[in-house]
Amino acid sequence: MSILVITGTGTEVGKTAVAAAVAATALAWGERVAVLKPAQTGVGPDEPGDAAEVARLAPGTTSRELARYPEPLAPATAARRVGEWGVPPKETADAVAELEADHGLVIVEGAGGLLVRLNAEGTTIADVATDLGAPLLLVARPDLGTLNHTALTAEAIRARGASCTGVVIGSWPNDPDLAMRCNVAELSTMADAPLLGALPADITRLPPPDFATTARASLAPELDGTWDAAEFARLHAPGPASPAFR
Image (cartoon, rainbow, N blue to C red; front, side, top):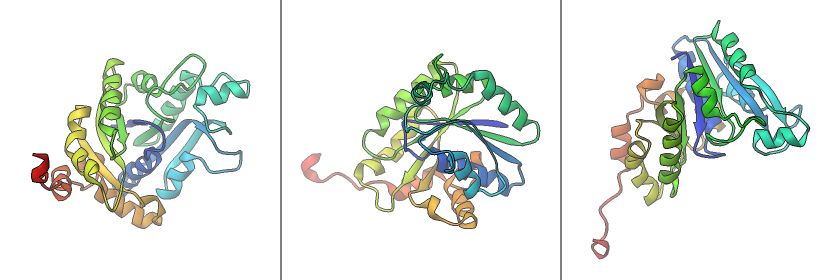
C-alpha cells in the first residue's frame, strides 16, 4: 500500500504511536515514508504536534501538518472558534499526492475518532480515506468497552464504502486485566478485520532505535513486523472461570 489512513475508536487511543510504529518498520525496509496530519488541535504555535512526534520516534520520516488550532477540541469546532472553515478535502488530497510522488508510503493520521469533523462541511477522516481510495487502519483500546467501540467504528467504515485493513491495540499494559485478555480474542471478530498488532504502553518513551525494534516486534507481517496474533492471544489467554461462575 502506498497510502494508509490511521483512525481510532476515539481520542487518546494511541494513533500517533501506531503511526510512528508503522513508519519505523517501513523505514527499516528501506521505504521513504511521510506522515500527514490534516488538522492538529490542542497544541500551541511552537509546540511539536503529532506529525512531529512521529518524525521524532521514526527519524527519516517526512512530516507535514496542514492546519493547527490551539484549543483541544474536534478540528471543525476548534476551527470555528478562531473564525476558520477548517481543512478542505482538496487540500488534503493535494498534499497526499505531492508526498506520494517521492515517498513509498504516506501515512495520514486523523484526529479523534472516525467521524470527527475536519471542517464546517462535515468532512471526516472516513471521507478522506474514501476519496483517496486508501485503507483505514483502526487503532483500538484494549480495555472494557472497546469491543462495542471497535464494532461501531468498523461498521461505520464499511457503511461509507471504505475498507478496514486491520486493528492495532494502541497501548497494551504490562499487567492486563481479565477484560483485556478476553478482548484480544474478540477484537478481530468485532471489527471483521485482522488484529495486526499490540503496542506496549510505554513504547513512546523509548529512544528511536529501541522504538523501531519494539515496533517491529509489535506489528504483524502485513505492517512489515514480526508480531504473531495467534501467539499473542495464546500468551494472554485468561484461565478458566471459577466453578462459581460456570
